[in-house]
Length: 403
Image (cartoon, rainbow, N blue to C red; front, side, top):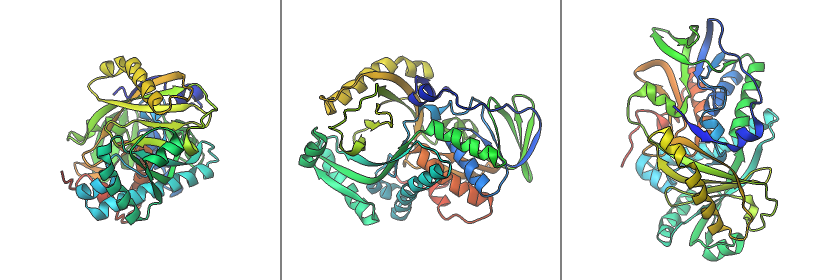
């Protein structure tokens, strides 16, 4: 699947920082990971830390799938608000999902520190009511978060005007958020894993999977084999080829990045910004003072149709930004699009899938792919070690989703 197009900012800025070989011989290992993006990299990192040998194989050059297109916002909020998720997944599961997402931000921070990875910044997050009719639901959401102990403030229209200098009827200002660079973090994780015994191959497509009584044997496009006790599939939306069940709806999102702008007086605390309407607009400021604006999502039909809209969507996003910050200089420099998927409850799918023995999926669908990838890495590593993980049921393929 063609997952992104255009000129993703991180890819343009950083290029191809490392080269990885393709597989040139048969290999035996304990865990094979298909997918070398952020999900596969975090899973391999967790496995390596636990002393579990693993091999990562990616059909592309490392990082050039959805990871390169990521805007790298780290938030505990998922696409389904907590108050709504409680109705779909149950109060206990919904609360725990939000707690895990919040905790994953701290885990990612610790990982970045351990790797001496510089592209991690703590942030706050502003969740705006797009319209007056959204205030009641947003108030219910604020109450649910306060019950859970999540640190936040309620902003009324006057507070928003005073702090942000634009108009909105209400907002939740959250204190737990961050931003990173998913593309470069993926490479940093792989480089660490390689030094600690993992193997990483790109341009190595898996063309066949043979499930045996106590192992899985992968055949690659080069004709070599990877024999493993367990398999982890971390290929994101391309994993649908293995599942053959309707799990999600594919969507195209669009992003623009400005030229550097050091004058952001109107932007309170450089917070992450998003809103209640769907599809929602989201914004953040990069470490080199560029403004990233994303949204204007469209149902995904095919790459050609998606890509033809890039220029038009970029113009719309620029207008969206100028409505919020008419006095702030904004000159778009890069524009791109990426494909992502949304599940019925907004939660990822993590763990075993009955028709595929010895196999675990790390599928961080939705707008919180990086934090979901961290959660998946923890759960899958525990399960491979034979440990019970009580959180696994929340994200399982067998979970019940109430409409």
